[in-house]
Length: 105
Image 1 (cartoon, one colour):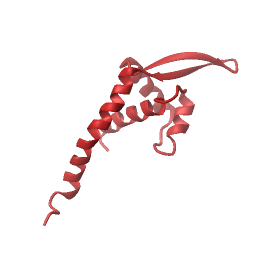
Image 2 (tube, one colour):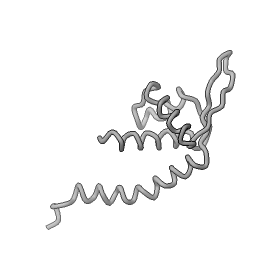
Image 3 (cartoon, rainbow, N blue to C red):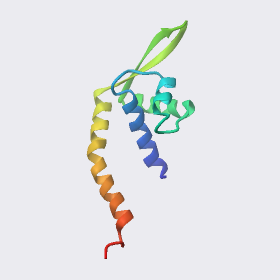
Image 4 (cartoon, rainbow, N blue to C red):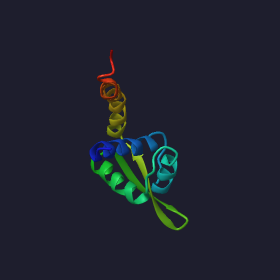
């Protein structure tokens, strides 16, 4: 898979993982595991990139004597998810072209 395409899709997956409830790194990895293999070492650069893009915010909360970072989706992050819904129709058309081109008889 194209690296840039995968990168963009993983960004969207992470945003979706926190869309309904704030979450922390290890929980995000667990929530995504049934759908996408993602290590924590891959996740944290994604989270930093999304924070820099203002798609999520971070807050620290003490948990069992340690600080845990919780991630919260912003309105801009919500907009990116909504835009993907619109883009999906175009992606499906591209997929159909690639798969079916030349098969019409």
